[in-house]
View 1 (cartoon, protein in one colour):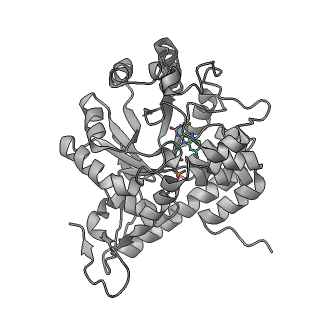
View 2 (cartoon, protein in one colour):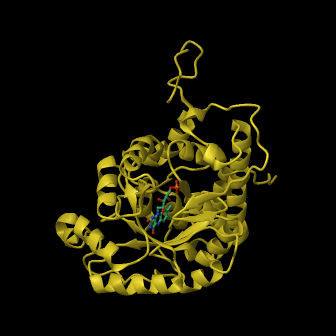
Length: 373
Ligand SMILES: Cc1cc2nc3c(=O)[nH]c(=O)nc-3n(C[C@H](O)[C@H](O)[C@H](O)COP(=O)(O)O)c2cc1C
């Protein structure tokens, strides 16, 4: 009997059934023992909600402000490579679904669909979310500068520079299966791999890995706001702001790069505090393990302006194309709206840390739960 799909876990199961073993290993896998991958989800669950009742919920909405503009939802689809491997509609299906659900989209530098095609689909939609482009550093600055001009010309509204993956993570599941991209699917804005790839840091990749002065150069090349993705340390967040970044994305790459780094829900409060102490209007976003509307709510309560969702959107795409993605985002949106109402919030502006408890144990013998002030 086929049960209806009612949550993001159901979407994961449907995707696994639809994908080849190698594709499932690539899309769902994490680094090494996948401790950070599991911990990302568990850490959101560890926070408990502290709902308030009888508040005035009239005129409720989910709208938020990012980079000076108002958007329907504080949720974006995270950048993810090779989406045409998951489904023939690829990044086009992903982008259409995100904009139809009022969510933002960050297009991966390793997109299998040209960035111009994706922008054309999304930009005319009036109730869409933000459209940003994710960049990996390329040692050849003229390559990066040329790509940047294409991104600006196509109408992308911000750049996301991913800084946590100067080398490929050690992903066991992927190493067993390889990445057998189907015929015709390739990263269209990334040069073909050369002999240095896979050589490891000591074997030559260190020369190509970005440094702070490269980021400073990038920021000077563009009028677009630049966010750094893959920040897990408050000091790096502060340094990013000092050199002119518009904000940071607290991310451990969905547990795909360095295993046993903490979950992003654990890192977010300290990083958000550091950022806000330096610049009140700097952006803080977070991703990793967001699977429920309550997780999104907790991200905002812990100091994020918005969150990104990764694998679940790919899972929706894999088994249902754009309709599958739209359903994933709709579920998150509905759950988030319900959470707002049930915690006594009429809008995202009402969300704050007083609506969370961190309970060391749920056992009744532990009465010392402390609401964070
Ligand atoms: C299959 C896959 C491909 C990814 N490709 C990229 C990428 O090209 N660039 C990037 O910055 N992050 C990439 N990521 C990381 C995501 O942007 C995001 O940080 C992560 O998936 C969030 O965690 P979640 O999947 O638990 O929601 C990828 C993640 C997955 C699962």
